[in-house]
Length: 295
Image (cartoon, rainbow, N blue to C red; front, side, top):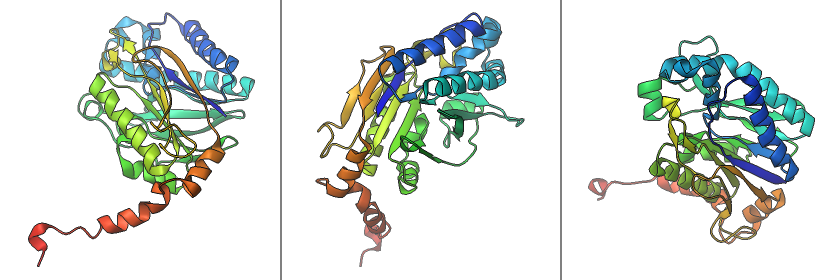
């Protein structure tokens, strides 16, 4: 299976036709290179706010509502592209209100038959909590697909090992980690988290960031990142754990060919058994003793 992960720039697009053309072009170029699974970043859908004009795009709260209102049309576009090309697409996440007072940060997952399901972000960053007032919603999910069992950890979620382990325990072989970070430190945290989840779960993780400036949208006005695909640094995978990685802040697709059999093989025959030994580590951790409690 060939995976394509996007380092995606947000553009001030003038109308829906321009947005549809951009997404269709990105998907078309990935398909031309043989991709079967395409991953777009967290909050990449915020460029939809500009379709309601620069004043709306430049207003933190108004932009959330504007994007949420266009999610159904964006979903229809991504579903049509997935069906037409016979591929799987994780679309860029978006704020979704669902008739609630505050939005969740939601990614939609599409396959050759259309919408497969959604994944909401589980743990909010300080900006999401304190400024945007975006809230968690929905459970973690593992998606059974023809190309493997896939889980999604949106940005900050990838930094928490218990979330990753829950997906692994539920059978995930591939974890998608779309992100949106405004500084090198934030990007590095997600990158390190994604690599750690690949190590712990002996699985493949796919990091798709937004990149570049978008001064017209203050919620995502600057993004730093590099698209990459990671695996465990063990038998059948690169010794660095980096299967493929693009340049920092360089827009475009990064591709890697993944063999699901290699994931099963490293879990059964690897130099280490991080996947199998997790319960043992958890049991040992539960026996922690403070120095003051020692006899």
